[in-house]
Length: 302
Image 1 (tube, rainbow, N blue to C red):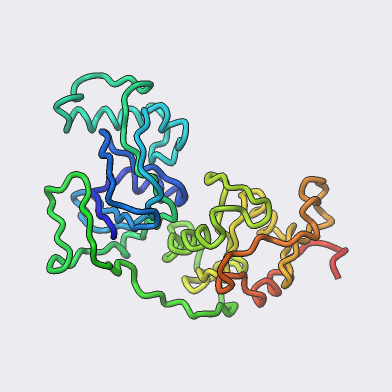
Image 2: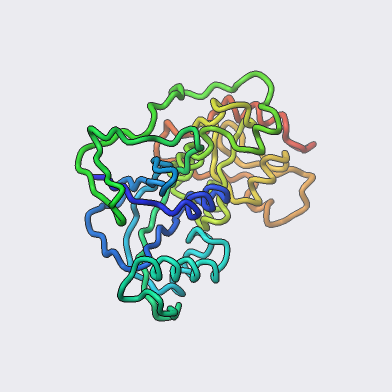
C-alpha cells in the first residue's frame, strides 16, 4: 500500500532547504482522519501546479488530530513553516479558500483542530529528479485534493546505482558552487542513514530530529560518496568534532577524543563503541574509517 497526495510547494521546499527529513508533519487544514496506511507505507508528494510532479516521499508513522497550538509545540519548524504565526496564517489561508464550514472565520490556535500525517525517512528530491506519473499505470486526477491510495507495488525510486560495498573514492571534490547549491543524492543518503541508525545519534543516542545529521566518513567527493557505508548519524556538535578531526572512530568502532579538546563531557565517550545499525550491511566502512584517521588531531593516539 502507498498513497499520493497533493503537496504544498512551500512546505516541501522549506523542509528540503532545512534538511528536516525526520518526523515531519504533513498537516491538513481540516481533519482527514485517514485510516488506509500502515506504519512504513510510502506517502508520495505530488507537488502542486505548476509543477505537478512527484518530488519525493516519506514513510508513514501515524495519523492524529491536534489543535494548531499542539501541532506547533510538538513539531515546530517541522510543520514546514518558519514561524508559529506563518503556520497559523497558512492554515487560515487554506480554510478560507476551501472550507465552507470554517472559512472566513478567524481560527483560535488553541481550539482549532487540524490533521497531522506524521512521516519520517523523508526524501525531498532535486528538481531534476522529480518524476512524472505513468498515466497508464497510475491515475491521479488533478481534481484530487486529499490523497489517493494504491494497492499495487510502485517503484518510484530509481534502482540504486550504489555498489554493495563502499570503497573509498579517489579524486577531487566537486567545486564549491556544486556543494553550495545542492548535491544529487544527498536526500536519499540522509534518509538512508536516519533509518539505518533508527533516528538516534550513534554516539550519544540523542533522538532529537533537529539535532541529527548524516555525516560522511570520507569527505564528500561526488554522488558516489552517498553510500550508506560511508555515513554515520551524529548529533550536530559531534558531527562538527568528527569533521574537524577532534573525534575519531576506529575500525573496531571505538570512539577516540582528541587531546586537543579540553572538555570532560566529550571525554566521557572516549573508549566506548558507537551504536551500530541493526543490519550489518549498513555498518560503517572500515576502509573509510582508516582514511579518516589521517585527519585526527592528537598526539596520544598510536
